[in-house]
Length: 449
Image (tube, rainbow, N blue to C red; front, side, top):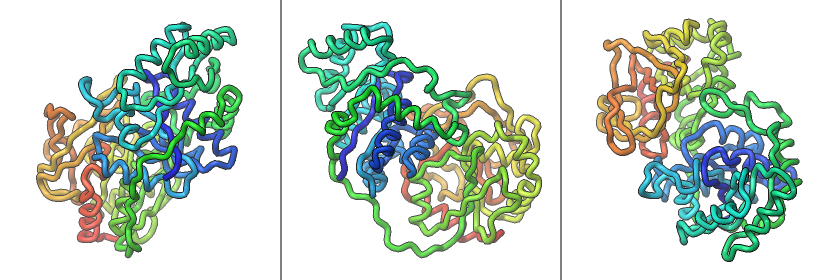
């Protein structure tokens, strides 16, 4: 059990990510080992966490996983750390619906027994700042909002008004700092959200650490962090390696839930990373591939120019090598991305659209036997993309998709030979048998590279 806290806000855009990264960087600068976490299905923020903390940032999502699984993931992610820092999602009480707390940062904080640090965009507010904070503290009496930070403060006079407002209102948590407006440290964004850690300059974390150290009381902030509820990490016996799975990992393919990879390793897989951008050939002696999501459209020319690897992947797919590809990895297996030739495993072209094509949680039911198990298997995931693929009807569909509430979304999950591709990012923790089924399928269909 180590101390921890969850950073939340009244709404998206309040400064959670900048504060979280600055706090992580400042703590690490002081020699503190930080265990980073992210609430919700996002990939980009965890990538920044990992770059600063030097260890994976685990996803905690109470729609994907039940309380036991979330607590086990949290406990595993805390091993070897001095403090846990969790970045919340959207507003503190926002989740998958408007009438309960499922999927919210508030629910996760209560599940884990952690205090909440509330960061509030204080622009154009003075005494009203205290009213807003009071409302958030009173909304759920079971939640421990232990501290407040004002962000985008305009001046020292503005900061003084905010301090007076908090101090004069009974029952409010302490104001731990007033962060001034500093637009030059804001993380740049693009069509799927913030830029990834792979595309950010190396000194950005240091700038955020300077910002946090100058305007926040870090010692008081560390004091409000409390030990979480006791939870037991999943401890596997010594694994006997059964097979080798190639993992596409570079700037173009960097979206993986750490729990997915961890579960594959527990099931006996050795994960071997390679780069579709720079490696001219696949690693030797692979029994299958896992091509995750990312931004292949931004590096389409480089991917196209790596002809030898594209041709090898295409040949291996035709020869029966098991391959699982999701979102960006799925696009890479199509004929082309906006006219730029790709692997040609799927007879369709991925086309980028000016507006978002899909966003939201997805319930997946297998309507055919696949590498994830037999017909009827249920898995949960998330979909977010700006591209679209018009797949010929002759290609088999293996997924029946629905929204969280059960609204049907049609069929997807395209299969050719032993290749399965989809826009849905699956979370293996939503069905712990999935990783075992995947490893079993790869073992039963070995086609070594």
